Length: 152
Image (cartoon, rainbow, N blue to C red; front, top):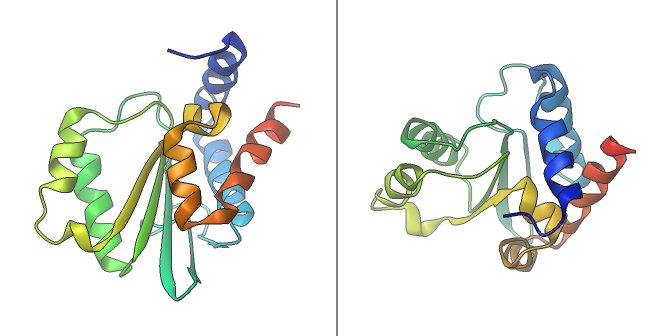
């Protein structure tokens, strides 16, 4: 559950936005991370990427109203491998089904990649998941500033 009612309404508002707005928000997240933003529209499985401290960083934003499932995990894994990521950050609107987790971490070589599965709630409430991600990518804390700008 959300620690504040405001968090619920912010997330609800973002998730009800049109896909075009969500894509623009994903690009802003990428820019704030100091990543090279992917193209708007079909993005080839990457909303942002760069090299940071010698590691290839991959960022994907899926601001769906639904929990991401095993089919989304298949696409995500494929994108991680295709882009040869060392660190990958997935930002979901509301979270991940157990089938997503099982499918993603069922691949035998996935341990070679540092993965951070975040939600909008993680950003707004500065959860442990966000703090853990900050250890691999310090600029990640800038994401929450974008969410605040979108709601002002």
